[in-house]
Image (cartoon, rainbow, N blue to C red):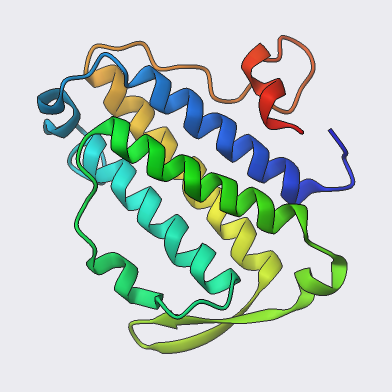
Length: 173
């Protein structure tokens, strides 16, 4: 890992953590995936669909897209396998955005459509918020997974070399 690229490292960590979390969902039935669980959102399905939609929202804004709030009008993705595939695509997009960052780009602003009207945010702030948002909701999904009777995976073994998860290596290229 190149410590000079913290945004890229966070994007790679994000992709690895999502991959690891979705792999842990493999034994869940559709009923278990959509069952009511403790958390801000009422199920693993709702929590992970929210995280994915917010990723799409900010990736769109970072890329000067025009989707804006309409991303939240889409139907939820059913089934954790389909959602994992969609999340993997979003994670690749975010990683590529971060791979191509420069100090100049980080200082640029993007217009972000809000319910109260457009706001201007720096790319650096948008990325930091997006990573924090993912961590926040993965933590909730972690508890929901445990509530489903599945031992939640360790999701913080990416950055350190000591006891680093071997699967993390495929995401730091």
